[in-house]
Every structure is written in C-alpha cells, then in structure tokens.
Length: 316
Ligand SMILES: CC(C)(COP(=O)(O)OP(=O)(O)OC[C@H]1O[C@@H](n2cnc3c(N)ncnc32)[C@H](O)[C@@H]1OP(=O)(O)O)[C@@H](O)C(=O)NCCC(=O)NCCS
Image 1 (spheres, rainbow, N blue to C red):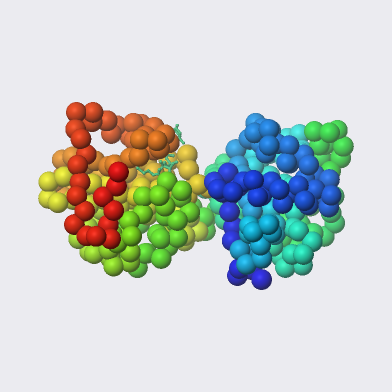
Image 2: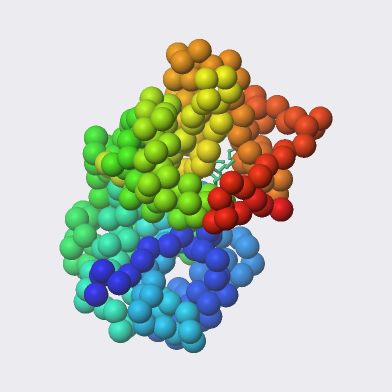
C-alpha cells in the first residue's frame, strides 16, 4: 500500500479545495478535524501553530471525487495544544479508517523526524501530546508526563530524540549521477517545475551541462537526500545561474544563500567576473531572494532569445 502513496505539503499543494472537502467528510470521525479545518479556512494556521506545515499522505490510485484520496495527515509545527516553550510538535494525527493498520502516520512522522534537525537545530526532541496509551511508543516516542493544554486540561506528552548527525545539512558538487534526485526535487518545487525545459532538462541535457560545468553545480543534502540545488555554468566570460531551488520544508534556513555563495566562489576560481540569472517577474520570493543576494535588476536591457530546436519553446 505504501508504494502508491505520496507525501505532500498542504501549503504548496495545488488542489487545497479537494483536501478541505475530504477533511470535512472525515470530520465526524474525529472531533479535532473541525478545529483544524477552521484554522485552514480562516488562514490562521501559522498564527496559531507557528512555523511548520500540514503534511498529507495521498493515494493517487484511489480517487475520491476524481482527486487523490486523503489517506493520512498530521501537523508538524512550533506549537500544538500544550502551553509550553518546547518545540516542535506533531499534532492532529489522523489516518482515514480505510487506511488504518498500515503504519501510515509512522511514515509521515519519519519524514518529520528526518527534517527536524535542519528545521529545529536548537531542539533535542520532537513532542506529541496525546492520551493514547501505546500508540506513540510504537513510533519510538517515550512518555514524559502530563502537561496542561491551552484548554486547561491535562494531557499526556511524549517525545522522540532528533538524530542530529544523520540529518545535518551538507553540501556537495553535483554530478550526472544525481539526475534522478534532482528531477524529483525540481518537480516538488512549483516555481522550478514551471521553468523546466523539455529538452535541456532531460537526463541527456543535464549530463551534457554538468560535463561542461563539472565544478560549479552544487546540492544541499539532509539525511543523504538532496533538498536544494543550483546549476551554474559559464562560457568563459559570463556565468548563468539556472534552477536554484530549495525544497519547501527547508526554505528560509539559509540553504539557497549557501548554494549561491558556493557557486560564486567556484566561478571566481574559474576567472569569471559576472553572473546573472533569469527570474519570473511574478516570482516574489525569488526576486526578494536575489535582491538580498546583491543581484541588481537590469532595467535598460531587453531579454531576447531564439529557439534553435523545434521542441524548445521560445517563451512569451
Ligand atoms: C528562492 C529560494 C531558492 C530561496 O531559498 P531559501 O533557502 O529559502 O533562501 P535563504 O534561506 O537562503 O534566504 C536568504 C534571504 O533571501 C530572502 N528570502 C528568501 N525567501 C524569501 C521569501 N519567501 N520571502 C521574502 N524574502 C525571502 C530573505 O531576505 C532571506 O533572508 P532571511 O531569511 O534572513 O530574511 C526558494 O524560495 C525556492 O526554492 N523557491 C522556489 C524556486 C524558485 O523560485 N527559484 C528561484 C528561481 S530564479
């Protein structure tokens, strides 16, 4: 069963309406769902729970109203229902009745644990508040004691140690062997997916690019997985930056800045004096990022291009 399920971050998932409708349909099965739904619908999720996200496990083979079925979900955020400065917390853990007994919540918890060290470098544990006996122990949590909830009631609190060493962010030079992981990452980052080229970004295209630019393309990894990447190459005079991206779970942690710094250093070693990149005008995040990195906006130039291959779009 697990093989046909895909993990998504609610806030970067395109079809939020379908998720909200499926949650609504499950709300009779668990009293906490209406509250979570109200946070999502009112847009107060982050205000109430702090930094973090709602992770979804979707079944792409079994459709509900024509959309992937919501199999399981949970939140992984600064806060949950306990009055405390401890963080992060796993909360709102729910698996749809048809999917129970397959360790699906465990699959999302594992994802959170793997990301915890990079997202919460100051924290030693991930916490969960629950009165269930024996459930979280199965996922490697230990019982800590009772704590007060924001509703003034006592609740059991469990914690699980974050494995620091396995999950530190490390950087490496990219090679053609990384193509499958890169392709998967690009497709998980909306703004990069939009920029993918049907010829140049194939395995063949990227292999050719990396062979020409073996020292100037970098990846950031966490737990051995690529979570961010930058392609830079030059023609002996100018450098162009392509497809800088960081997985949504790892953004705003300085990863893209570190990738750009590594690329700039490598380009300088090759005697390159100037680099540029193309950014969609409506990509506010990226434009803020490049501004912060000191990449000035040229307003006295028109970007002109011509396709030399019928399969490669010229763009508008
Ligand atoms: C743009 C992107 C690569 C930034 O990655 P990142 O690892 O989050 O960036 P950093 O943490 O290094 O951010 C450095 C600075 O850039 C600016 N910045 C980054 N993301 C920002 C955002 N969402 N909103 C406003 N400013 C932002 C901030 O000044 C930030 O510093 P701060 O966090 O101390 O305020 C990432 O948002 C991404 O992958 N976006 C989708 C793909 C994309 O658009 N790529 C760019 C193609 S040109």
